[in-house]
Image 1 (spheres, rainbow, N blue to C red):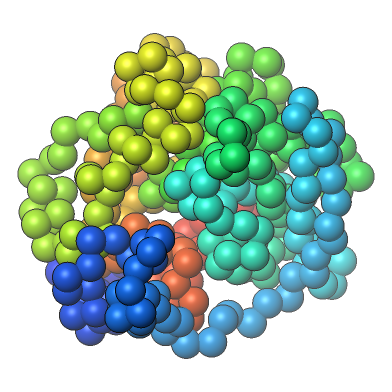
Image 2 (image 1 turned 120 degrees about the vertical axis):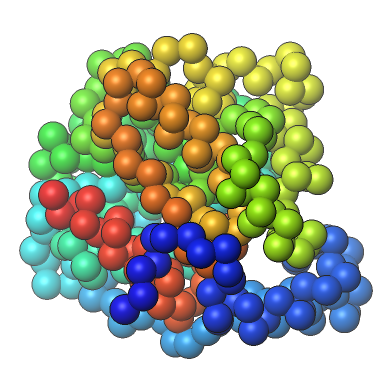
Length: 323
């Protein structure tokens, strides 16, 4: 199999064959899109094949939180055996979209349980619309993490092997939970972050990322909308609110003492600048950090159903959970 973690500057074939669908789009799945734009977005995002077979079974539950009950979905292996590893997982969606049922939530959890016999607690945190802003999503996620640690034995989890993880906005929330957990003295095993947005404003691009961005259609980039996305999350201007370290962990002044962290970025993703910068900050703080770039893929590729590249990322996450 080709190495899926060495960027080549080229789109993976399965995506290269679809790039023409993005011609003229300013944003994939934009609100108010014309029928033609909606059809182009759907063609870009269509499954590449059937979902992976899954051996996971689920249970719905709620945990108490400061904003009211937080719905969670607990994934276990169908054979009833657990490895002792636990993962509290947060889906992405720009802080205002997404759900437990999106592939980045449901299929990721199923894939990891099937591979590892871990227990995954997927969190249905409150989204930022209708007056909801930070710290509400963070509070929901931290409540789910704390509850999982406190009730680890009931879930079949070793309390010393509770990890947090998430994708995109969910990666941000996982990073905030890790910081909060450190400050509260709650043991965290490790963090697994997929293409996270860790800074209020995008850091400077590396030369390699500049070259990749030059090959990205405008419709899948974030440079034109990351400020609006983050200000909606904060509920106000970045200049007034962005210094809350739990809101954007990359803005924290002290990252020492954090648990080992795995960060996997996407090659064709301008948010990669944030993941790369955060990895460097963690390393400077003496944190055990591993940084990987998934080659040839766009932001959000864990939502790609039936993609072998998604499966490869889940394999790498599973390796962390079976340590």
